[in-house]
Length: 228
Ligand code: UTP
Image 1 (cartoon, rainbow, N blue to C red):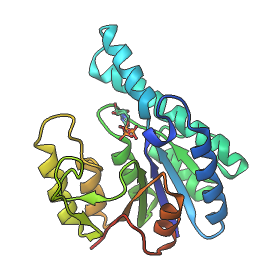
Image 2: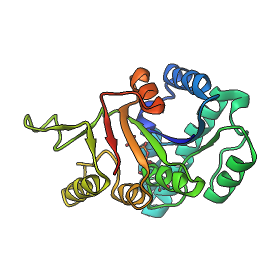
Image 3: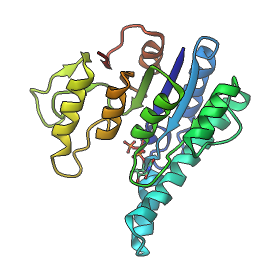
């Protein structure tokens, strides 16, 4: 079974690489690799933000800031591939076509970062799943589940254990209309892509590898499953 893992950059690199997190995650992937065909998309975390803002300080435009951020997502992908050793395809892909060709031709795990400016690694993960025909995506982030509102700000926020793709798209749209800085757990484009291809998507805390394992293996978990 093909599974795409989307690994939040803030887990991998909150300022410097979280070596223990990367080791733990790669050990879980190696343990489960005999049963699942993984492909992995890594986010940029703090270095992506730092590099983007440095480019802006030099007068660079948003395209250039994104280009710098993308390089940091690829640096994180390189680290996860390094931790996976020979299990990983020995190249960080920058293009979906090349990644998909390697995914088909090789038993090794394809690991990549961002692709083009203006995107996010959420959308990239959804597109990678679509391209390779994966029907399941597991999103690892700092957020343990999807809520009806920000649980830190709204005591009435309700956790969704399960929701449909159209409910997710609606919720993501609601967030998108608000001010910057109130980012939804999965971006709008990514939500629409998993919806149009009916990709079952699990949202779990990447800090709790038991939850990640449950989401991968189809066991119950404390996060959110989006399907139907
Ligand atoms: P993300 O914001 O997707 O990564 O990409 P992340 O670090 O996982 O996100 P959080 O903060 O943990 O939720 C980092 C930045 O890289 C650029 C964008 O500037 C984005 O904000 N990027 C990423 C692109 O321009 N294109 C891509 O395809 C991916």
